[in-house]
Image 1 (tube, rainbow, N blue to C red):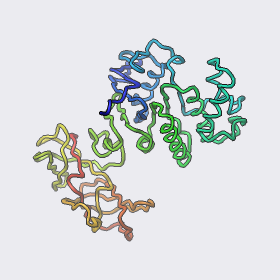
Image 2: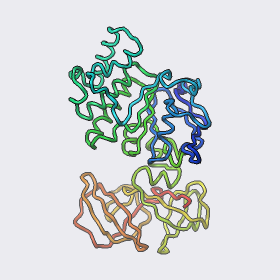
Image 3: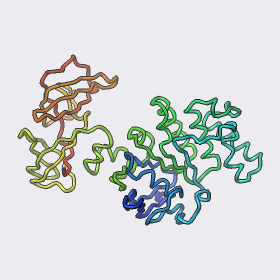
Image 4: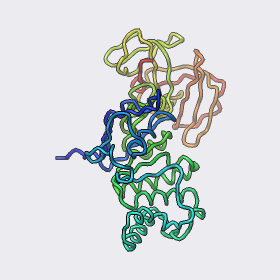
Length: 363
């Protein structure tokens, strides 16, 4: 019999106010031991403030934070057994890589042989053993961030908090370090709370993702949950690319909503909670679920379509992206990985999809 995972962190009804502004508004969640949980949201959504309360850098206005079942609100940050990695590497420029990584152990009064071994092990883990004698100024941005990661992990913290640690790096280097973080997480099994505004980064790294909006959690779940089964139109639009079409619900039967669009045509989609006949709605269809003419290739049969004029066409390597303008002057994106097509800009086309691939939310 599988035992339920032990919670490393529990956040209960957390509130943080700055004057009249509520930055965190009744946030509750649990993080399992060894889990990689990401706070995803735009600037001002409350994700970093929540992380800082867990770290002890901010005091909540209400609510509790528990680590291993014990409230830590009265525990100073340096006694919470938490590692922290920021966007700025905060390395000591006058110290070698070896001394930077060993600093947390030195201030804890650990014996030199223990420090030397722990530092060597950690530098090997982040593939920087050959750079131990260098200064931070002699390293690339990616190498400096790996030193910061090694320093945060060298004393084996119970919890690792990471606040936008890769946002200063270019795309290719960011992806390389993401792979390193995934590998280190697998090898060490440390519990990680990670903050980012980058949805692709969140999807690549996380076991689960908490989507923040206006101080609240709009939805929490796996990347597949958020992408395939968004709880509302906000999550649908924030996680991944989405086409959101407005219309009026004319029928709801068996979990399928029929919606009349602005030009009078009707389409169907799977109804979300709160959908009823007569209500205004938004229909979400992912760009890759809209199929250009002749692209079904024996796959699931489409049962409805949207017509439009192709106003743009881009080759993106693994996909061909179309932009079409509908009769009601809305632009939609379509991504086709099935075949290459000649330049179709200016031509009329009919893009089909299955009603099971559309979700209908209250507007």
